[in-house]
Length: 111
Image (cartoon, rainbow, N blue to C red; front, side, top):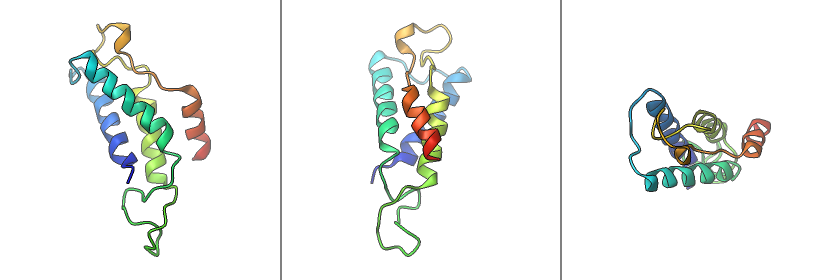
């Protein structure tokens, strides 16, 4: 279970809270952790999984497949967090999150 939906939801909410002025991330280690989550989501959303319902296909045969819930949540999270400085407006440049433009394009195409 890749939990792409949950990881993407965390990134989406984190980016919304940070953009609104709430400082959630306090250290460079936390910035690195979030950047690693972004790298994970950039690559993992293309891997078939069980989706947000964790059940496989409609017949519940346990077969993994690509789910719009996983892909859509990953796209929303990557778009929201791209270029966001996790230390807020006055943060240093090394605290900005980078999303691979090719990953964003692949995500757009796969939808």
